[in-house]
Length: 494
Length: 99
Image (cartoon, rainbow over all chains, first blue to last red; front, side, top):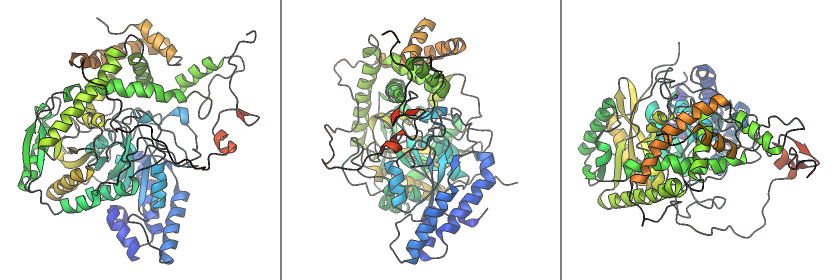
């Protein structure tokens, strides 16, 4: 393995800017690494080697002309396959979009290009971002670099595995109920969900529009913050984009790296800390991390969030409802698959055959669940009631943040589980997001940072902050990282 | 008692335009029943006077600047379509011959 692939994004950017290495050399090192290990990991659905090398050469040419380079110029990035990339295949992990080449770039991808980052390719994911293991990808699962027989988390398991396997220093994910943070936790990497509306959804293939949030994945907190600043900010093309400046996340990460948290109040949610649903090994690593944080000067405060226990049920009504509506666009007319059009069948029959053939089981379940929750007669009891619970969860967060600066919890109740162990009972899979979902319903930011191992597998520590106070969680995350260090998976070579 | 019957799932599949198989109906009926029983817990919360939240961002009537911008060309918009005829999306028949 080339040393270039072991560097952080911050180090790569500095070396390129100093002229110690060319962007093309860095890109080639990562493409070589992908060629060497992705057969085992399967983090990528599509590798755009030509596009990556062209982008890298452009950075090198700019540098030769002595033009100013952005903070991540020349740094390779892997992009979750749910964000459109102009002319480059985008499938959302679904057969229904197999072979589709979008005619436009998503805002996030456009900003990555403008910043001079090098897009290596598109990463694997659960179909339409529904799942916690990548087992629902139509193109086969991604394997966790820590143990190839275990899940890498989901839905963004490809992005997290790509950075854990040193195939890329940075990746983009999207988080609707935990799809950035839970993969980060189980692969020993950093995964950050910004404030909803802090990053643009334009060109993000919609699953649940009121929850979907693009965000950064990295091996260090500072790298995640650097990518956050590049991708975030107001976008007129997204009507729910927040018209405010990006919170100072890089500055906050650098401040946290000094290891001083004097005066910072960390809220422990009483209902979470009861340990219900979390493995003992996860709770042990979590409590060790709490002890480390108090040594840095942080103060622990117990807070009550009585409605958090209803977050998972509310989420599994709201998200499927929005999904059933959003996925109506896959009708075999404007893009993607069309099945059964023999000249005799009606549009409706062709549509039903196309959707039956193009969607996998989890997507079908959620479309039907959402259709049910939105039906007249059930609307008030299910979707309407879930929206009221969402209000109460938001109130719980607001009250908690009157007492503390951030809330902390384990990211996910269990470490990476073996393939096949949660697919027969879909609700068992949903429990992976028990601790991550409340933040999505509230709309605030959350980050997962590695805090140790349980039986040799990574455990993630989650920090949640008030909306548009993303900088707070980066500060605490960087401080924790300075105390416990980063995690390195076993070698994939040989 | 089951929260949802096999017939109801068949109805949902029709509404959802999913031509599911008989075997899928058996599987989905059992799984959706488990999920619905779990999510029905939202009903335990006393929330009669609580306003619903559809969205965490309190923005309304967001409009962009009224300026002319480029949009996709016809070729670009049609490039990904499964079937195209005379520069339009071609769809299977919508109305019966006799209608």
